Image (cartoon, rainbow, N blue to C red; front, side, top):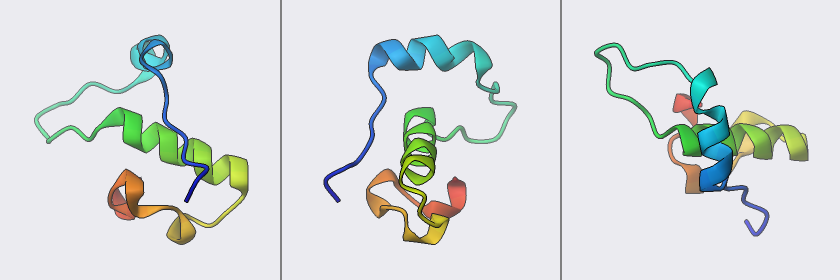
Length: 60
């Protein structure tokens, strides 16, 4: 898929205050999760049709 979305370091720093803190559970890579959410919303596709390049779909 050529239209993958990856947030820059600056964008991630700006979103960091709004992300939940990890409380004992293993933390997921926030960049992957947010990037896939943006891709799905922007393209209007279903979650199960999203790219596996971001990781497992069930974590999103």
